[in-house]
Image (tube, rainbow, N blue to C red; front, top):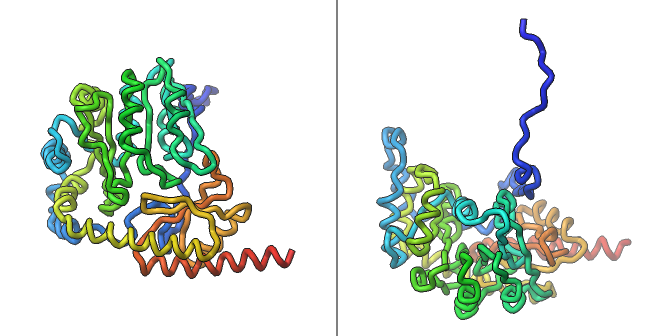
Length: 365
């Protein structure tokens, strides 16, 4: 008979207990998915061909990322030693913060922005210094520069930014890097393909610049979880020391080269989204909905106090959108992903019906 022992449960580090929690609103997503900024159509047909040829035996071997890193580096015009493939950009952010942030350091973060920067930083002993954008949600360049201190270790900037869709100019990014030579400047270009401007060509020229890219958006590989971090060899050697050698799975590694090769598919999808974005902007303007200019595959709109009910009504109509009201400076605002023109016509119909229902409810009060 085993005697019962009274004991305390194991406890995690204090930092982990204090971490900000992130709960993506997943659940049932059997609808038009305009809530996560994914590719709303499909991946390249060439990727599906490769998936069909993968043997069961191939899955018994550990993945080897180096050969595919060389392919990606060539695609980006970089050396293989300047890139690291990661399990989505989330892992890229995580390992970068683990490599560089310690007690007494500061992460400088313009907000609102991608939630996971703060989540991963909160697992370290560094302090997050948030710089709030003004009401127009444009990049707070002057305030960010003013917030740089000797303790600033990483400055994380999404360009284009989420949820606002706003952008930072190349000149501003270079100026930030120059003003904080002691800090890593992370430029997250997750939505690069919808914006078309990059600083990845400055890798190795600007010594403290690191760029992240994802293959979850335009390429349609969100389910495979693969991203890339690119930077000077001197910085990447520390990132690679933290990075697990097997975190990127074999399926993702097999599918990435054909995805990169199929430029016709990528260009066609991006062109379709940009056309749909223009049409949707016009529909929002016609409906009298305030929106923010976006250079990404989403638009942030101001619904006001009825934002939660609006999201519910859209879901009931078969269209998923993302409530961003809990983000700093975003009360009452909802982010809507841009899909194809046909998908956005469905979204416009649902939006107009939701607005009519909200107006009717308000008049009845």
